[in-house]
Image 1 (cartoon, rainbow, N blue to C red):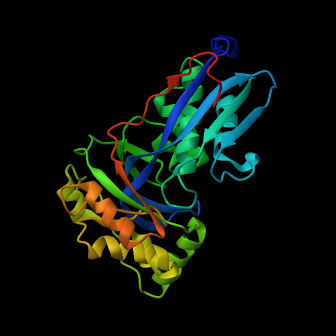
Image 2: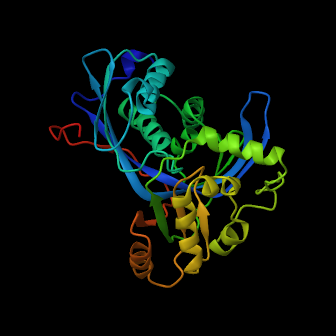
Length: 313
């Protein structure tokens, strides 16, 4: 499709809800020749969402506005980088205006920035008549960050291999409500990898091993049996609030309690039939942690056209 064919309806805007993810399993394996680690993971999208709105502008540049949350300098924001990557991949010359509503905390291991970038790519692709197919969109997302490839797709449950950008969509798990704990800490991914590498050098970390070779879980009992996150050997030790949140879930008997990504978010399954009662118990026991009950998502939300005159926000 030529740039001249990529013309959105005048005033057209597309809004995309950008969900968080949790990692139902995460193994950090050997370092590859490019310096990145090979990993295996199971992504599960959940209903804690940012919102990205995209539209064409007459400025010739990429502009970002935002409401709430911590997004850092625009030049470094993944949404801006995603928009520029889309322009480069399609030969698009239009200026772009992107608006971000931030609800997913930064540095929590929930993939918020990656989800925002994936939402921007999917929204722009919709706005301009889908010039990029799903494979190209995922590959473009992977150049921005390993998790972005997952968020350019449709599946809410998927396996990730390689750097995490080799995505295999999976049939959805039965819907569940997860208990999500958000300690008020920021965990940087780079230092978490460094701490894990040092621990392995000292022989104190779990041995390398595949989590997917035994097969992919198709129900929650299998998820519980295979739940693992290699960062749990280092992150809770370095961050007492994360350790406290994990321990509280386990002390109350949550059948699954796990760190997400490199943290600091933790999540678990309810230990009794009413997730709301579990949530109230957690909030009373650990008021310093933000606790949410979030549904699992079978699919990522589809881009939605914004009604003209409704504003980009």
